[in-house]
Length: 405
Image (tube, rainbow, N blue to C red; front, side, top):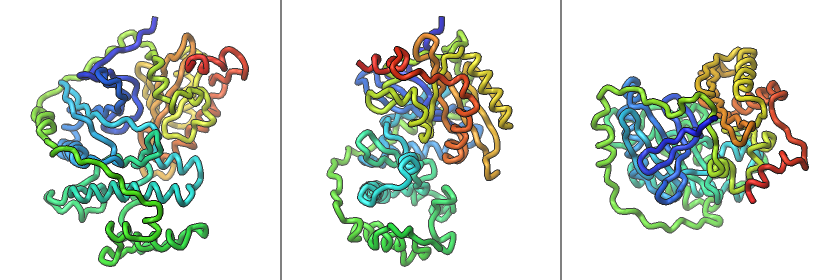
């Protein structure tokens, strides 16, 4: 009998992993007191210490506490366990702006203007607090359930009073760094309106002295069309005492935390987790990889035993010259990115969503998002024989509809 591993961190019930990077995992969690869904960023203290990231992580947490704005992902609180640090964040359900652009090809001008206005509002608020993000790109701009923009990932942010003049250091993602590192030679597509074209040229001016500033952008005619600044009340003065307390004992020795899943079987996913995995109450996306593949986090369903799924994934990965690491029905595939510029990594995790029905959750852990999309389509093609495709009208195809009734 496969059992679901139950785990709580303070008042939060911890669920599946929804994101994974080199130094941290992000898990879905639920506030047991209020029922609110949150994202829990989990960092191992030993990893932070080993990679000398104490100051960087402490800065990121402090910055996210300082910059509270409707268009910035909210940091609720920070908790510390014996071996882990838990950053409790707002759970944003609409995915990345990158995925929306990739899915639609291009956005209409009015929609683009709305996102740009919200981005400028968020950036302006950050600057008013003395915070500079330095890694703004579509992957770090999330959308909530109401299609409102949320700025995330302040890992490269800087405060002007920091030593070493960090604002003069080149950093961030190469395709999104400030224009002065190059000649800023570019042209706008023919469908851009004159107003948009003009503003973009002012923003991408390679000369920082003549480049338009936030105040100028807000006065620009193209920007001001349908612009309605958000009216919100600033919270009381933010205290960083809890952040300092979390990092007080960081240099102690840490033992590896034990897992609660001792029987070695795939985790069971309950109905609440399945609902939050999809948008709204429509669970059809869980079983339809065709409409889901464009997202960074993707999934397919199989009726084969979990061990058979794992063996097939491992065989396909080896045929693609990827390194394979499997533990507790969770597999990490690693290789070199297509442009040989860095590492490419994918994590696959198996969940039992119903008796003898398994969902394989696939997510990018490292590398380019577009490369991941191509990889996922290729993976599904090679695993076609084990992917479940119920016939329309059968009891199986109606399973999810029944669950939402």
